[in-house]
Image (cartoon, rainbow, N blue to C red; front, side, top):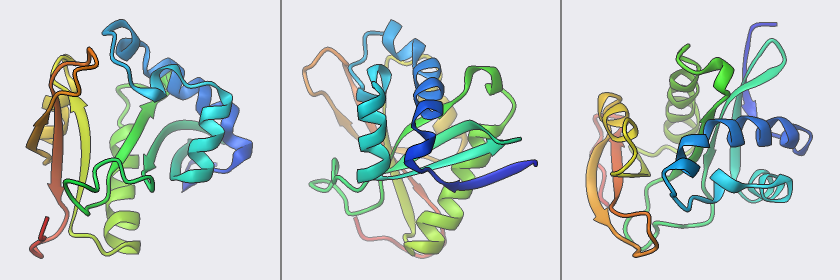
Length: 168
């Protein structure tokens, strides 16, 4: 069967719950209050319905997932697309599947379908490897935020997808 990139469907919810819960173990250990870290089946189903949730399947099983938000979390700061709920199944971690899915979403969905010249995401300063990982992938910190909810300093990061200038 190989690799299949596609938008998630409600029938994928149980697999997405397993992938997300497993991938977000460190987030829970760090005490970060990210909704995906403690999502239940109903929240996963809501995410699939409200947002654009994408998956990378390997041999018919979800290996990685990422969500393109339609809920406007950062619209006060930028009109650029915002990705969230990025997770790789722990058994597939370190095999490049997360990077492949992120590349596909950036190229085919954000740039190709939406025509956006850049994309944003947010992550926590206290996470030991996310900020450097996103920086290696071309993201740059553009804003520091502290919601005073115990998560500490959060970074809004942006990646330019084209040579075209963006205005936000």
